[in-house]
Image 1: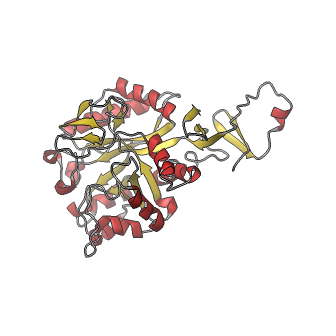
Image 2: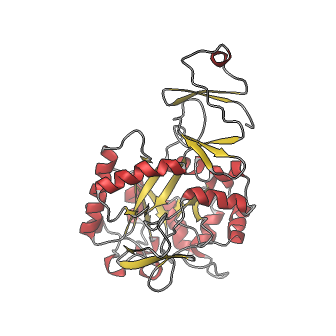
Image 3: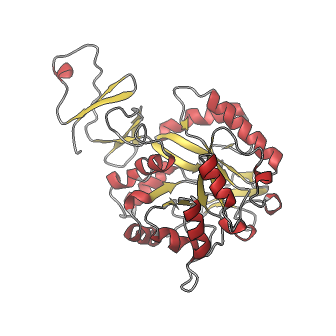
Length: 365
């Protein structure tokens, strides 16, 4: 809708109309009118693959630091996240999960919502591990899973070739209600198809940390692009994927199955040259991105807010289309729709006002 009125009562969208409400026209003192002329009004941004920012890391930081980050993110339009815990020694992962569970239980009204926890590891391919420490990777067995089934676990990224019978994917999706995503994997197309049939329904950061497209052995990327019912994640920071690859995805993939993520780490928002430990190695913020000691990308250093702007600035999508990849589509994937990810009657009024002139954020509600 190019123009209109969104009516909200007690944090819930009540009505959307192309005309002002009668209460406003009559000057009802109980009604607060916000003039959003020359602004886009969108749902709050949802980042389903987020390791941390502003010096806070979901693997290492204490609860107070996590709460501080959750208070900071709304000003960037980010109203919902899936904190991502990466591979680490099991005791450390259990501590990270416990801290996140406490943060979830003590969330405040003015904080970014945690929709659940994303475990990226430890069931990943050593060959495609990226920044994940090889000594802490595990085979996907129920014994190795013990303790990691945190109450708020919503999603897990794993390499399906490590479990050719797909027992882990079936157990998680059918018995635990956990979303399974294929990533950090060298799976061929046949294994990818088996994983999808077993219940996997997303590709984690498509093209990154997986087999390259090869015409005789297409692998995960091609298979997931061609499966219309499978979601794909895209890191649109300008470092992980060339815009032409994004253009290709938008040509091939059903639009509603594309999701953008930041995959950002604690260096995001920090001064250039800052360093931290990430996956047992030192990573440093360079102009080329967050690089490890080998000079390879280790996550990103860009919030999803800028990832949305990039799609518009690269002339790949209009803003109304780009915003859906960080709102409606992840909400649908995570099962949080229709309460979140859209502006519609009975939806939560997590709203962002963007200046149309430069896509800067004017206000967040």
